[in-house]
Length: 290
View: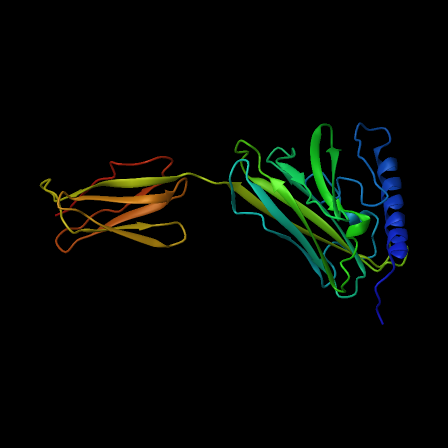
C-alpha cells in the first residue's frame, strides 16, 4: 500500500537526485564556458528540454521522455500577453504510481534568451524557487522549479506549483514556455522515475482596430441597407448594414489577422476583399457589379 513519505525521506531522495544532477553538470561543463548553479533541493538549471537544453532523463534514465501514463501541463499561459502583464502560471504533473514530484520551467524568445520575469508567492513554506543558468555561449535563461517543500502536496497521484510570470515591458514577439517534470518513487535513487515534458507559447496582444468604408451602385450612388459581412480567420462572422449614405463600419476588430469582407445585395454583386489590418481602415469601399 502506498503511504505518504516523511519529510526526511523526501529530502534524502531529492538530495540524492541533486547530487547526481550536480555531478553530471560539473563533468559535462569541464573545458567549456557553460556555467549553471546547482542546488541539493532542486535540479540544476537547463533541464527543461528547451532548445539547447537536455531534460531530466539524463539522470533518471530507466524510461524515455513521456514514456509513462502520466503527464505535465503548463496552465494559465495566455494566448496573447500584454506588456508588463503579471500572469499566474501553474505547472501540474500526474502519475498514479509516484510519491514525490519535481519540475523545472523556462520562458524564452525566438533568439533563445530569457523573456519576462518569474516570481513566487509569499508562503509559509516556499514551494517554488527561481534560478538562472547559461545555455551555450551566452544564452541567459531564468528558471522556476520546485523546492524541498514542494515535493509533495499531501496527496497521491499528482502535484502542482503556482508562480507568477510578468511579461516584458515591451513586446518581445512569441514567448515559448518549456517545462519538464519528475514523477519519482522516492526510493532514494534516480531509478524508476518518470520524466514528462510540455511546451506552450504566448504572442503579444494586438490593439483592436476599426474597419469601414462605403458601398455604392455601379453608377456611384450610395447603396442603402446592404449587408456587409466580416469573416475572421476561424470562420466567425460579424455583420453591418449600410446607412442611407452607403457607409458601414466594424469596431473592435483584432489586428494582424486576415479577414474577408463581402457585401450582399438583392440588386448587385460585389467582389469580396481580403485584408490584414494593422491599423484603422476607413476606405474599404465596394462598387456594385452589373
